[in-house]
Image 1 (cartoon, rainbow, N blue to C red):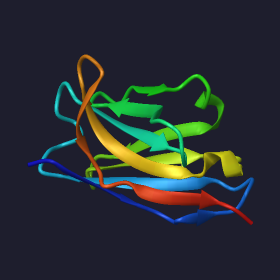
Image 2 (image 1 turned 90 degrees about the vertical axis):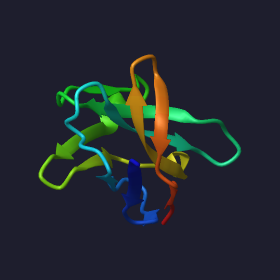
Image 3 (image 1 turned 45 degrees about the vertical axis):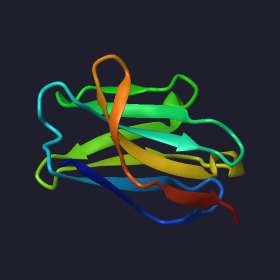
Image 4 (image 1 turned 120 degrees about the vertical axis):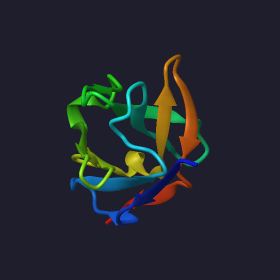
Amino acid sequence: QVQLQESGPGLVKPSQTLSLTCTVSGGSITTNGYYWGWIRQPPGKGLEYIGFAAYSGNTNYSPSLKSRTSISRDTSKNQFTLQLTSVTPEDTAVYYCVRGVDGGLYDYWGQGTQVTVSS
């Protein structure tokens, strides 16, 4: 059974960098065919794709967030990390780490972590 767990600060000040880590258990992030990504849900809004790091190490980002987003991997710890720079209150959301499969489906989700951007 694959499990994903987000960790990181729940409060970030405007203009700072949001950094979240997802720890994966029950499966390797280098296993062929899987994509390890981030999705968020702002209050009162729908889910928003942020980006992913593939099993190969290739990355893909949402065009609207690409200039501020970086997703990296630590294969020795089976973790992947989201960094979102220059945050504003509009980046306040519940952030989920997910496992994606071909076809754009997400079959495993973390429980989600609330991140609030506020001074």
